[in-house]
Amino acid sequence: MTADDRGQANLVALAVALVALVSATTLGVVVADGALADADRDPDDRRAATTVADRFVTAEATTVRPNVIDADALPSFTPARLDALAPPVQGHDVRVRVGETVVVDRGNPTGGVTVRRVVLVASKTDRTREFDVADGTEVTLPRRSPRVDLAFSANSTVTTVRANGRVVLHDPDGLDETRTVALSRYETTTLAFSGGSGAVSATSYPRQTRKATLEATVGD
Amino acid sequence: MRRFDGRPSDRLAADRRALTPAIGKALEVGVVVIFVGVLSTSLYGGFVPEYRTAVGDEVADRTVVSAAERIEAAVPPAAREVRSVTRVDLPTSIRGANYRVVVDGRALVLEHPASDISAQTRLALPGRVAVITGTWESGADPVVLIEDSPDGLVVRLTDRRAVADGLDGEGSA
Amino acid sequence: MTEPPANRGADRGQLSLSVVEAGVGVLFLFAVTTTFALGLPDAGAQEAQLDAYAEDTAAVLSREPPRHGGATRLSEMTRSRAAFEREHDALERRVTRILPENLMYRVVTPHGAVGFQRPTNAPTGRTTVPTLSGRVTIWVWYA
Image 1 (cartoon, each protein chain N blue to C red):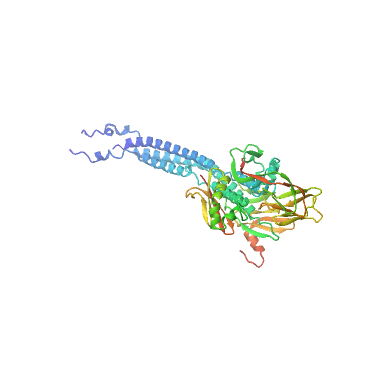
Image 2 (image 1 turned 45 degrees about the vertical axis):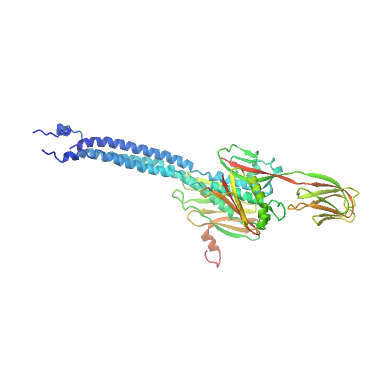
């Protein structure tokens, strides 16, 4: 019988088999380590980034209305204000960017979670036009504006001003000085002057909007 | 007598074999048993508890973030009289142990018996919310109870049975 | 002289059983390793981001002043079939301008749809806006 030969070869084969098993186990442990590191979803950073983006886009302090960011509120934004606006981001590195400009920066959050939102950025401009009005003159403001400041000359005798048919200013003694009229945001406004004549300087504040992407990156 | 089959074993005398098959097998069994023992010890003693703790830490992170989001979503819009009870889903145990979720100021903290597992996150609640209190024990039915108070809204983390007991005459939900 | 039958039996089975067993063990370990090497399913992070994009688009569209009449651009478009026919080119241009370049979209209104075909195998984000004449659904996905 060759049983004794197999007995010898069996031990060697066994040793080889055990070595193979050990290396397979080690490989498995290494892969498991990698998979565990991959499975880390950073839930805290993701929550902070989502909250920052959401608050930036809806809060009163930064927006004209939801999804429209006020460009004038951006330059003075500090990390402390961001902490008050979105508490989950306290203690994290964060960077908030609107379009190309970095609005808030603290630490170095590269490699963290980024959340993006689509917003419009509204910057205030003002336009002043001067014209002479008589009874029945109509002037259309070409851009929508939340309000218009009408400055009447000292000797004007205009008694009534209508905006889109609605009476907004009325003074039987003649309007003078500067009055502010609130306007509809959804329609272009046509001002109708009646009752007299005079020189009027109208200052309107149209908002210029441009599209931008808001990026909030939060790291550890 | 001579044999003609030429098998090498026949050329060896009986006492020249290195091991008998029985002892060979016994050695094999012994080696395998030792190997299995050493491997099990090293795995269960070193790697496995470490991995379980790492996974427990990750689950704790996700749990606390999900709980915080549910609490924030449970705050109702501004109204005159508010009382709302919202159910929240929490895992029954983390790393095989029961844990607690407590409130620390304006932050939600997960406390776990294993010292390596902990998680916390700050809550982002509107200014109407005056106070957040309460604790959640894992394994019970966690709910968020929001009520009005003279100072504002009070957010309380409690159990569904505690809320049901407080509803006089309405029975348990 | 016939050879003993055990002679032929000695040529079989030289493969040691230990090696076979070890082979099976190694294969088993590889199978276990593969289950966690192939990775876990991705969370809804992409879908959440796409949902946010869709909601932002809906918010911007529903607050925009209309081109002709109606309260907002969206309600103007959904008023009637004729209004939809007239406005849908402008809507397409507007949505293309609003969204970042790597996104594709589909806007479904009660009178028709604008945009690309929805993919079946990619994560998509959606949002629904109620208007007077029905619901407008916006789908967004990565190109």
